[in-house]
Image (tube, rainbow, N blue to C red):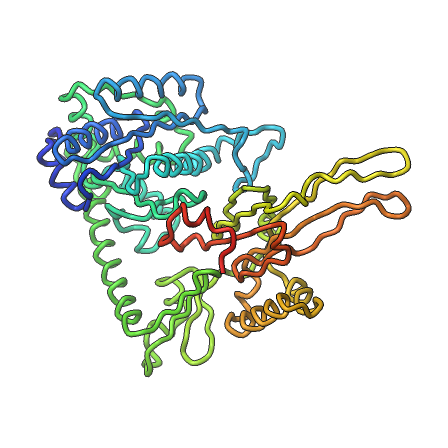
Length: 491
């Protein structure tokens, strides 16, 4: 039977030995107020007193229940009593972008019951990224434990996940939700992955650390709760009632299965790394396209040449190009994605487009003030609108057909090189910035006109005196945030 002993500071220090923290490095911890995050926060605080690290706790008020704000302040007071620096961050539901979800009721600013958990997770991580950026934190600690892993294992198993989904989580991993620019370069640390929730409860009880019980965790309307209660029942039947037939679905049985999946994942990764280490990798960091130039010769029966295996093992989409190379790129846009990825952007704003590119726009002159359009009877005050969409063939044609000014001639060369270097299937998946302006026609009809302003990933800016645009591929985490924001033009 699993141990129910509390976690000592010495044992926790052993967990932390796998995390390479710098001396006096500030770390962040996500605190929900539940027993797992409160135990983590307490143990981290005890550890930091000896290690010299500084800790800041971030408390997210989801504002989905009437009691949530009161509970957030309650948790803040507990942490303050423990002399732990903390900050409450509220999700402002009326301000968030709901474009990732299908909202059944267009009059409501809230997602539906079945959607809010997923959406709340996205907003929670966006706030946590902002908090980490504010405090110059690069490592965010979260209280995921063994029970969380096993619940996730069963949910993924029901969806038919492969070995990557069925293996255990990593103690250190990239930030799981990169939807805002502050998330670039952050990592998530989970030191309690192989500790049961019972042990975390015992830790809080022994240290006299109170915690908050979220009533939604008892609701059978959520899949994870159903899985949790089922696992509790299986463990009880096996450990207390002695029914052997329940052993495969106990903590021990599922942990063993997860360990086997971890072994198989490592074997597959070893095979993939072997082929990659003997290949050349060309990554276009501006456009998010990677080319794997395979070694020569490769036996015809090798798994890397079997597209279904290469697709499953390496990436979601693999496109063959000549000479034994593989190009990894975004799948072509569907009509639904085409509409969804038309995103309005305003002066000074940075948006994540297509979940791949951060795009920013800044006005560098006052030409973009509101214009007053007059007809015979009225004056209409309007301002051009700017939006982002994917590159299309007409954009390329329009640039090529422009008058032969020196700067435009350079852009034509850029376009021609882009067409030669990027396979057709990936060519029309980068962002362009469009200006939509308004004018009154000779018969007093208000009309609109659109023109391309920038293809930022290619360094093409057709109105640089007035508008500066930039873009950065989300996966490029090596550049600093301050540098990214300050760059008004990236080539």
